[in-house]
Image (cartoon, rainbow, N blue to C red; front, side):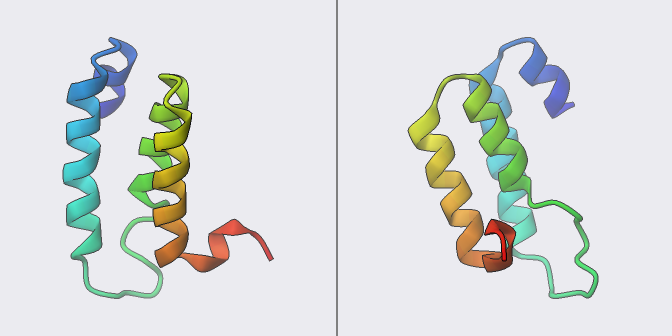
Amino acid sequence: MRGAIQKQKEYSKAYSEYHKAIAIEDNLNYNEPPDWFFSVRHHLGRALLNAGSYAEAEKIYRQDLDTWKENGGP
């Protein structure tokens, strides 16, 4: 659904859905392997980049690195 919203360029609706998903993801219990393979913040960051919101995308990616420190490389 979020992908369809994003393709229709209804960015504010898509961002709202991404933020809901992030809140859910942040409250998941720790599991190994993780319940979700990729952080929802990756998807939101990409949507923000596509919309030209580069500073906001950087902020989201940095938030992701606070939780998943090894996502930034070696």
